[in-house]
Length: 356
Image 1 (cartoon, rainbow, N blue to C red):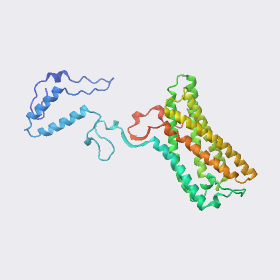
Image 2: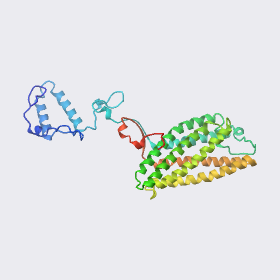
Image 3: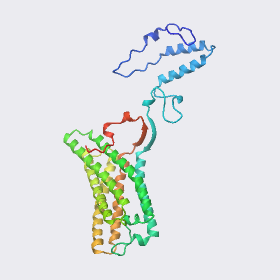
Image 4: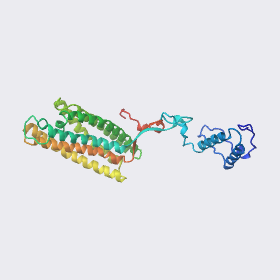
């Protein structure tokens, strides 16, 4: 029988003896044992009986706080958190999930679309108004009314604005590529056919690496200007166009494998429909781009380069629109930066560079 803090011995309580906690079991989590209602009533009566004793009120307050902590283990009092904002402190501080940043994944996708699109518009208007002679200059020196993307982003100061925009654009694009790979891998778990699973895993790797090469080629086209090194700029642009179209085609093929019965939700149906439309538009624009480029390069026809530039703008817009369907694929997901989140990490969500 235990004595109280003030030296008095409480009466024997059979209920307390009957409800004593069992020994710890290593094979199951420790259970929380809450005091019985009559036990809580006895504690309140004892505290009221000794309210006149020194320190009785303090003991009552502390016991009530401890009872709240035992009854609601998920809620911590305010004094259990440090003043530095580093998260909770105390007995289970190492297991607490502390969120430092949370951003809607849809917002990230909107940012990656609006940033280059808005910058491209600013570069076009400013270069067309203030530097028309520089952006319309070609090796054939024929009449031209629409400058190419390389022309309006290759003059100064537009080139610096465009490079800063792409620098901010590239980071989220890599994150989206990682997220898509893990999302596709999670969809593979729902397939029952081993042959289809093997084929899907192979296509996931192809889509993933095509996406990374496309992003890297976009970075190369941006930072290798056509006025500084035209031969290398042209080759990197061809790589970008090839990987971009290949990525779109491989993505549609992969979705067909992962969804043998078709889209299951309205968002998936809309996303697939937009992807198909943007891919078809990209193919048609690419054919026109190649045709008018050859007419400009070898025949030097008037306005051939303008038609080439128009097709280039359509290709760029279709590419942005295809990647913008990420908003439909991840409408409610969030980008999270948190402390002690390792317990939520799974093997299929790692950001590895190794080819499976």
